[in-house]
Image (cartoon, rainbow, N blue to C red):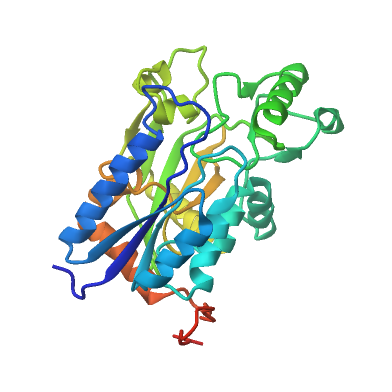
Length: 355
């Protein structure tokens, strides 16, 4: 049983009018609903009361329901399902403006993680290593304004979860780069992000906690079984399409075997990167090595997947943290509250909880 029973509002994106989904897509809306139901079940087993609260086409209805519920905490699982949508940060902002504690990171941190070039620029400004030659390309003509060292990886600048990454995303010429930029502009309605492709090992570093942030055992992505014509990247197929070659031939080793000195460097880099964007509660930092075994931050993920037995939960299990305990730690961090987070709720009759 939990040390203190909470009323938890579990919010998620119930929008169904996005692009058609493939039958083997583990990231589909149907899979999302299965996950949300299971998540609610586990949180209830911890001794908490859970109310599922979907948000789709009626923001006012969602706000009225959340107002009536007055939960102790909102478990934020709202995730954009439309290309280019940036509602994750807006929903998080709404919840906090209503005065409710919320799991995971703030609206600002979520927004930074989705504006990938902005996050990369921030990390670079903080003295943290990011892939060389990271460029935002808003027009096809922007390709010719830079000198590139190939291979280069190019993907949509405002997506996540591998969206827009495929077998053609690692390019070896300006012609191929222009072609990929053209496709991203057309298909996703957003700029492209191009970076030098790093050929070394790739790690996912799970982080858990509030003020006392814990680095979980490293997970290493193993691309050794991929055929040579498929680039070693975590594409959408590798993440979600269960019948694809990428999915079947890409595996994850957790805990990864890493030299102690390199492990220490990567751990510090993950913490510094997560803190730099304002991450809180739980997160994942993706890091890849170059040909000289130097680590670079590929991406900071605030509010990453918390599905059982994969991703963050897998790393937690490797640290001896069972799935229910991990969820409780996420709730604990939400109730601890990020430093300097002032409550100014805008609901009638609400009280400022902390200044």
